[in-house]
Length: 183
Image (cartoon, rainbow, N blue to C red; front, side, top):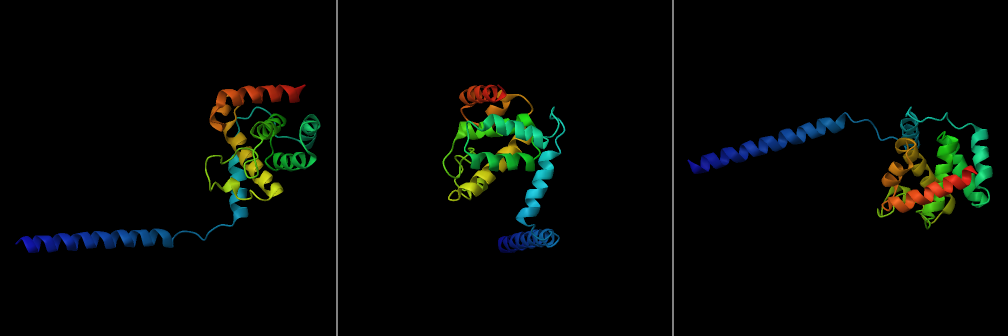
């Protein structure tokens, strides 16, 4: 009797296993084809720019141009060009663009961590171009711009907690730099 119950139990377990395998197979058969990196980037941009709780209007080219004039004494031309292109691409407001530059100044990271994105996460996708400065700065700026759009609601202290482990110091530095760029 014990052998029969044991056999029935194993048959039941195998049936459950086959049903589970069949459900998983059906689930993945209906999955769409993988999307390209460009399509994912475009979808992410759309998601990031759908937020409507930002007070300022999207950056016009002249707004970004004013920010560029303000940051020129503090950044190399190549960095200004790349970061301002990302700001335009993500339709950042003037204030958000300043914050993007401020993040670059505060983080001042080594190659692959120029804006601090992915620090502490060795294989973070934002660190994939660590050996190529322009590509690395661009991808880091894109991640930071996305974070600004999704997480910055005008409260710099709250954003600092979200962006950096040492939020108090980061907040103080960001406030100082934003004030300097507004002058």
